Every structure is written in C-alpha cells, then in structure tokens.
Amino acid sequence: MRREVVDERDTNKNRPLGVQRPFQSALLLLTGLLIILGILISWGWLTMIQMPGESYRGELPPLTQKEVALRDALQRDVEKLGSEIGERNFLHYKELMAAADFLDASFAQAGYKVQRQGYTIDNQTYYNLEVEIPGTQRADEIVIIGGHYDSVSGSPGANDNATGAAATLELARLFAGKKPSRTLRFVEFVNEEPPFFFSEGMGSLVYASRCKQRSENVVAMLSLETIGYYSDKIGSQKYPLPELSSIYPLQGNFISFVGNVASESLVTDAIASFRRHTRFPSEGTALPNEITGVSWSDQWSFWQQGYPGIMVTDTAPFRYPYYHTANDTPDKVNYDHFARVVAGLEYAIAYLSGLSQPE
Image 1 (cartoon, rainbow, N blue to C red):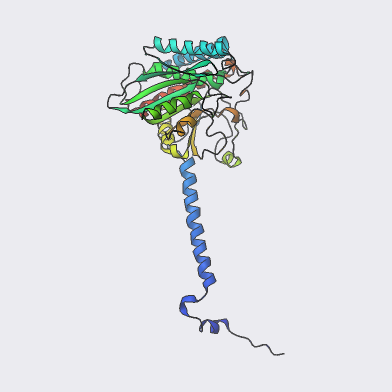
Image 2 (cartoon, rainbow, N blue to C red; image 1 turned 135 degrees about the vertical axis):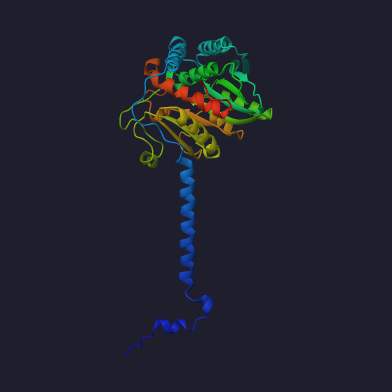
C-alpha cells in the first residue's frame, strides 16, 4: 500500500499562529520556572551557609597574658561546677542549689546586683540568675548572653554545660564597669536538660516568656552551649545531614555559631566580629529549626517568643564522645582553646551591644 508522506512544515501552515506548538511553549515556560526556582533555592542555601570573613587556618598563636588569666579562671569555674559540685539537677537538688549559690556569689564579687528569679515545680524552687548593665543610649534594646548551669541526669556536666555557665560568668566579669550603648544582660539558666527540655519548666523558656510579658525588646540572644572540646583528628566532626559534611570541616577543631533562618543576620553579625578579631577556627550557619540539633539549647526558648537567638557551641553530640555520660568531666575540656573562644566572644558581644572594642 502506498503511504503518503506529509511534510510537517506544511501542516503548521494551517494552525492559527497563537496555538502553534503549545507543548513547546509549555516546556519553555516550565524550564524557565525551574531555572528561577533553582536560583531561589541556591540563593536561600547560600544565605544559610555563606558567612562573612574567613575561618582562621594555620598554627594557633601563643595565648596572650589576658587569655592565660582567662583560661585559669574558666578552669577554676568548670572544676568547681563539674567536679566539686558535680551532677546538679532536679534529682540532685542540693547540688543544683550549690551551683546557683556559687554563680550568685561570683557575680556579686564582680560588682553586680544579682536578680534571682525563682519558679516552683513539684514543691522545688528553681532559679534563673540575671545581672544587667543598663544601656547608655539604646537602653530599650537588650542583648542577652546566657548558658545553663544544670547537668543531665547521670553526668557531672563539665563540658555540657559547666563550660557555658563559666563562660557566661567570666564574660560578665570582663564587661563589669563598661558602658554599652544597648542594655547587656548575663543570665545563668536552670533546667535546660530533660525532663524540662522543650517544656514549660525549661528555665530559659520561663525567662524568655517573662521578657515577652514585660514587652522587652530583646535584639540578640547568645546561648553558650558545650564549648570546650576540640579535636584535630579527621572524622572527629559529624553533622546531622550528610550534605553538610561536604561543606564544613571534618575536623572538630572549630567553634560554631548556629541560628535558625529568622536569626540569620545575628549569626552573620556575631561571627563576622569574632573572625575579625580572633585567630581561631569558626563556622556559622542559619538553618531551618527542623534540622536535628539546630534548636538544642536555650536559644530555642527565645525563638518561641519571636526573639532572635543563636547557639555558640562545639556542636556537642556531633563531636564530643562523652556527651551526656558520667565521663563528661573537667579533664576533657581544652582550656587553651576554650579561652581563645571566650576572648573572641568578648569582641562579638562588644559589637552587638554597641560598645567600643575591648582592650
């Protein structure tokens, strides 16, 4: 049978101009939309992981005289909380109160008037401890630096989180007598660990809720969480997402600044100042709250009230092999590195609070 050959080009002549090749038009439109979507996703991803400045690389310089003194003070504080007092939580209430008394007295010795803010659960009263330096020009804008002083059940809590509590205390000492533009507060939070974690009994949530009830304008919150363990061993650093391993170091020798997407500008401001003044490795990210570990500290409580907050951390379980164990003891902390980090945070806090740079 004879088959008639038809030139497709001839058939197009009979089509109305506006409806020629609708499939190709739709395909071009879809391709364009996908390109735009890809650009938006890439831009969003970059804003979450791309940080200002560069992380320090190379041999660390000797500690300065100031850093040596800071190291010794931090070590005394950690040994007091993580060894002499030891496990401190709702099951070890006497030790928890001993830790609160130690921190209270230490703040007072630095010249502060301590606000001991209590709340009661099951006939036990727990205390957040607050000290404040009023702002000179923007007093209604509040910068909060804090760490929790309780330990998880079954652990003396040296790195988690005597380091954060000690850093909060020593930073308060460093800023005593200074005159920041913004109001600067240092807060020792109680009951961060289970069973209070992510609950109404969490000390930082009680505190953040109080701030909201008082219509306080918290412009920045830094949670100092487990900041004393570092390793140069390849593979010592893990991540909650495998994709992050191709972006960030595999050596757990850096300090991390972590926020949610809403706190991205606070992450970049803090790490930019840290990097400008500190010769120590640092990484930063602003990720969705849902990613494992992003919300695992007291900054979460401030997010619940709509305040910007970030966590400064050695990444805890993603690096620290003694996390939430009986072996989380003061000897596991690298005090030289710990001191470098706290010295760098002094610059970041000075910047955030509108203070001239530390001497």
